[in-house]
Image (cartoon, rainbow, N blue to C red):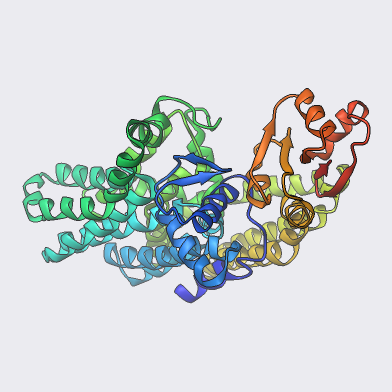
Length: 512
């Protein structure tokens, strides 16, 4: 299971430059950490910034010390966490039900689209998912075996989760366990949980960084730690990430694909079996977290990633029951495959529309890859349905992860190299590093949310918000300015005399 996940997550992991905006922002944190030697306070574009706790950046920086700062080093903590989460999901599924459920769960989680993507990019959510799932698994081992040492060990991943995303890393698992014991009328068992030693573990591992930052920066950091990092997501919209109340229903349909058609039946059957411990603990983790995330005003698909292992185990248990007694569960699977067929039909219609449309040259060049991906998706899904109708049920299941592996291969070998040719910040930054002279500056005008410009620039970047500022910068020969090709066409007639294009890559160019 781990070897399969490693093939999926590590293949050509560092072959493509970091993507805007999260990957390049985190890359800038790590680059400055290595340059300045300041491993406590994050810096972005020459300024102090409070973003997330630093555990992920520490891991990437340590790897970069060994390999050099590069995309592989930035993404490795996420890829390793993805593989480990697959393993823990297998163990939890096996503990909840049986070994076949664990194996099915491992295959489902590693090939769910959102989880696959998160395990191949330099973001924090898959690491948080690992720590949360491991903590719940250790708790459940202690609960079912009566061996209290597992309760003690469950606090260590919680402490590390605090260094990934703050209090949220403790709040979700702790509340799920509290609800589980409440419904079981076993709150008294909390006396067995080593709560005081556990809190000490969390304080000793998770709090020193917060304390050090408070001593250095005072109230401004405290406002960040308990305001921006935790409460702001629920009280307001952060960085424009908003959405309607049903946002996460859509996010799960897309992100959990190609397995999302099994979720409604799996959830219903889990609810019907809620008196059983595995189902009750699953519901206690999924439902409150889903409701809280839906109420929050800031919405990002990544936020619900910690729910995936538990959603996966629900779907795996559904398949396990089906394999054990196909006749009994056939109706549920007919409904699921009918939903699957509708999705296939929509994809097929979309492929036809895409193939008959006209696009700008950069998108037109990607169309063969997009059509190939769509064809693999349709063929794999259709094959799964055909095998189901032919009562070749194991082949019906196997066709879905096989399809995802094929999609990943097409993406990494064909599609992403083409996308790379349109990402201009890294090659332009390298050219500027050779051309810039002492005293010259780098500016950016109307480049949008593109931290890659900051990451790859040889010096800090001055962001110009008005055309007059750009004109003044160029007229005074202060240095080089990034802008987009579209923006350049708008301002070209009004640029000061003597302004020239230094170079153009993708949809970015540099003028001086």
